[in-house]
Amino acid sequence: MIKLHDKFFKPFISAEEIDEAVRKIAMDIADELQDEVPVFVGILNGSFMFTSDFVKVYPKPCEVTFVKLASYEGVKSSEDIQRLIGLTQDLTGRTVVILEDIIDSGSTLAEVHRIFENEKVKKLIIATLFYKPEAYKRDFKLHYVGIEIPNKFIVGYGLDYDGLGRDIPEVYQILTTQHMTNLVLFGPPGAGKGTQANFLKEKYNLVHISTGDVFRYNIKNETALGMLAKSYMDKGELVPDQVTIDMLNAEVEKNTDANGFIFDGFPRTNAQAKALDELMASKDSSINAMIALEVDDDVLVNRLLERGKTSGRPDDSNESIIRNRIKEYYDKTAVLKVYYSSQDKYYGVDGIGSIEDITERLCKVIDGL
Ligand code: AMP
Image (cartoon, rainbow, N blue to C red):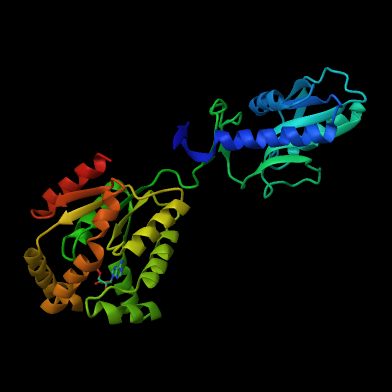
């Protein structure tokens, strides 16, 4: 990932892929033009790198020149009105190949066509390295297209973000979600995840999602999801993965502007962990850390029985259900330590002590990320 000014960008198209696309356009044009000597016209500033690499691999004699787009001064409009400057050469009767770095809305191309209409060229060919079909609003034919890309902002290989990034040999794409902090709060039932999440969400301005809480909310409101979940929760068993994953996805989607999330009680299985990685990747983000509260079983059982006196949770009031929840944790959930350790994201924290002490231990980990 790179940062230019205030924005983050991720790698998108490698130098090798670009090289391949440039070579292909060059060979295809050479095939079409055979022994005719074309004039390649690069549109500055963006196409300087493309034009340079292109003419180096063009296998036959050619001429190369540049024109620059300049905004009309004092004109304010939603679509930039621009004109081409620097066209000094007589192009009468010549085959001209426009080399564009990128075509999105097509407004530059419209200007190119307008200017070249008066030039009495023999033929005007348009070649672009990158093309955003979703953004293109014109009818001009694009004779050669290197790589089609989605309608997202890119930088590198001649393209800039407010002046920066033109020099990068690869292409980077803007992150749709700008830099979130996403934490998985981990540990057996009764470890104190919910209590700690309440402090951490305030301190780091994160959205706290507890799958247990969402299920209980659904049970209280007697939704279909609640009724389904209740049958598992009452026995201390895990709710099936797909049900839980769909619910979690929906909760994340409700918070599109979040700075990040604290996941509490999720993931609880390998399948859930994979689904969470995919969900985060779809937001151009990732899980930064799994922070585990480590607490002995006997302490857990006592804590949960104690909590059961006031929490009103049926699964807190019966020792055998509590023991089943802990067993489910060791059978299905504890393996996630391996999952996150292999990504270097596992942080164990001693979960015994005062609430404040434990919060402090957690903050130390988060501040060090
Ligand atoms: P908790 O509030 O995290 O202790 O969760 C209470 C109960 O909700 C669990 O014992 C499960 O039955 C169910 N539950 C919560 N989160 C999940 C999850 N990620 N996967 C499956 N079941 C869950």
